[in-house]
Length: 99
Image 1 (cartoon, rainbow, N blue to C red):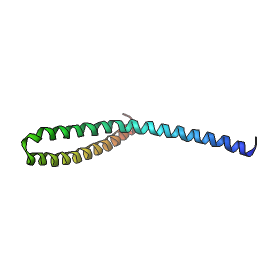
Image 2: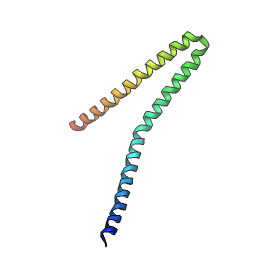
Image 3: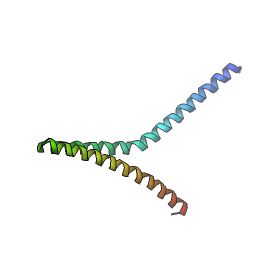
Image 4: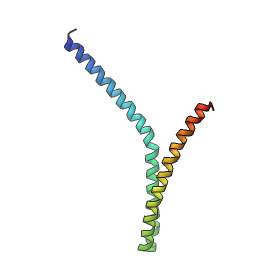
């Protein structure tokens, strides 16, 4: 085997390994992102429903619901992030404690 053939063969193997790692990372990312994406879509649907239900009450009520919906979304996602981080910590602590 010449140096060129050896380099070419190892280059193909390296590309195959890189593709394998990329697909594994993509699957892991999608597995983590799918529930959060679903949660975001449900939250958005709830905001749209609130807006449609409030539209009959006038512009001031519609504006109030829009502001409240944005505020709710911010607080909701902040709480989800904090709870997600807290659950990771509690899971780690229970694993260390052997429970």
